Image (cartoon, rainbow, N blue to C red; front, top):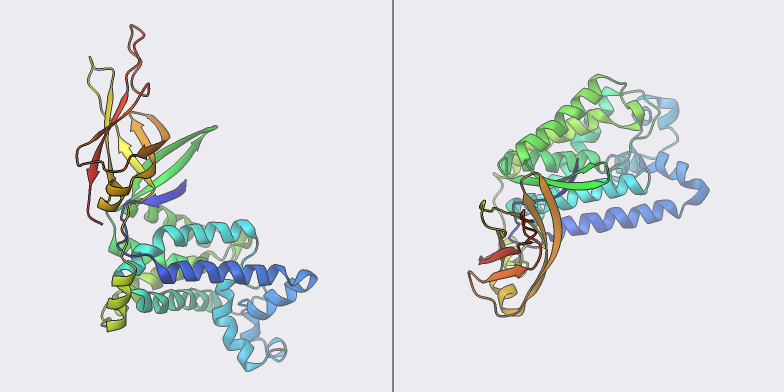
Length: 324
């Protein structure tokens, strides 16, 4: 299952979340630039439990390096796919959590979640010489907070069936519950870092994120946060949407709805619409012309049902205009 997006739209542009993604990418490029010294770089700035428990090893590092590694490990990655998977998950879930906490509390939340996951891993693997790196623990914290805040949101998920992409909306509590269960089973059924994955760091980050959310929600927001919310307020709807099509037995046409913002209705826009009809699903590019009104119907010719007499219907999408 590959998450594509969630159905809970954030009201503001995720400034801190985007900045975190950019910093992770930048540090990954710095990491790659180390060339043959990359292993040394990871051992210096990754989280190595033995550095804190074995005096002979800790002697090779300064006090500053020991403290820095407790934070820097969450910005290093083991490869491109490791980075891509983490940043994609952060992109999907982080914007909504930032929307609720505000940028400053969210930044503190993210760093503390990553730190909590690192400490959890550290104490469970006290003498391990294997470095742990990656933003997975911090992102697990974000996912834990998302579960608390938006349990009834839905996650648009890509399920590849052979070579056919199938999109389905899965409740957030089910998607994240399954994810957490897999992490826990992976941790319980393997070593501390079985298969190169720090399972317990994921578990610790997820649980830590739920606890930290409750703590940080009690901290009042500042006036600066309010001004940032005004400056970053969104004026559009998600580019990818899901339309559940319906029909009637004698009608060759399919019917569905799509949502756009008032500004998009005025200026026109383009959307990717995942049309679901029964067990069928397909993604279409839909152009909305400027000046459309509430209830306008867009006709996509030839995309309806194929009737027994050979007649092919159309897909009719009703435009709904919604304030963001």
